[in-house]
Image (cartoon, rainbow, N blue to C red):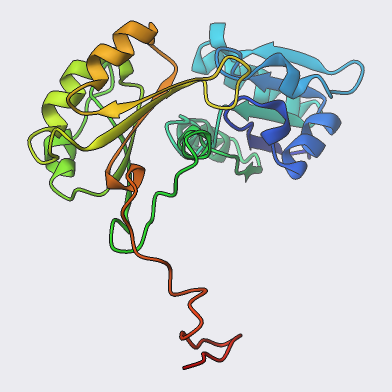
Length: 252
């Protein structure tokens, strides 16, 4: 019996899908892709005769019906998610259903939009003396947020933060972050990271709401906040000439 492949398609640029993920897309008999966020170009490498489904207009039940019937017919199924499916990907519920049907599956990771956004602004989340922690979160919407994970609570750590699915509530985001971050804290909003129409706005907690409004950004954007976006940090010990490790002897 064939198996289902959950593939992280990356943030948008068709070249940012992994080699392994693209190989499966090329081989798949059935491709179900998240068309609201995954460009059609990502799956244009499919073989002739492959069945293509856009899950943007499908329910969970419809997706699983196509998937399970395809596997039972001896077909290879590629379930193509945006970014990496492990982050706000909603693939756990699909895997649990496959488990109940005794269907094997594999997850192929991808490049998340928060990583593509860091690349877009050319910054590093984990700077020595600044932050060694990255928090990925979102504001509550139709999906509730556990109280212990409120943005106010997470902000107390002053860690590097990537906020998903919340740019339409940028005013609320700023208000909650400001309970712990100074208003001078740098913040960046990256819309459609890695897409041809990528848009970047960089400011501070004090200015970003107005900047986002002026730029006309209301969805499909990542919010990055923290001092990692600033200029002050200590150099890494990894390449310090006085630092000894397994592969290099330090010098005085």
